[in-house]
Image 1 (cartoon, one colour):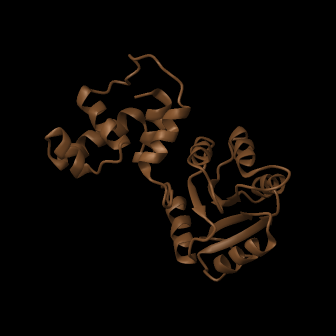
Image 2: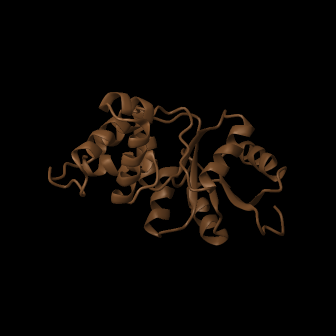
Length: 218
């Protein structure tokens, strides 16, 4: 743990296996961009460490004693703690990924992931983006939709018919080019529609759009 964390990405590691914690600490401490502020062996300790150190990133194991990773996420959400959480897992179901995202997680990464990919994941999340690893976007959307409540049909947030079509294509995992071909419009027009959609809904990327669309049954 460094004494001078100025300018570095401050991290708390939470995992009930000491060998995993130590391995992560060694990987991160070898890079001056990262500062490991603390380590936790269970969910309650993870919550306490996060409240104490106020890290930028929390690496949080899903399966831990005393309080699971998802329970810890809920406690952090209830307290409105400003931390970007990356869920660590050996195996996880799409439903758990959806629940973690709904509770505020910004990334999901498997423990067997190479170190270079983990570092990229941390940087991506730190910069405000989401990281889902190898989870297919369309699978995630289906999981989101299965959990979403029904809302009135007229709750369309000022979206045009074309914008709703674009959202539908995004939720199916289409690229901008594929959306353009499907709707017989240019790729630039698709980008313009997405910009308008993001502005109307107050989202900044496709994953946030998927979360919003599933929640409101767009």
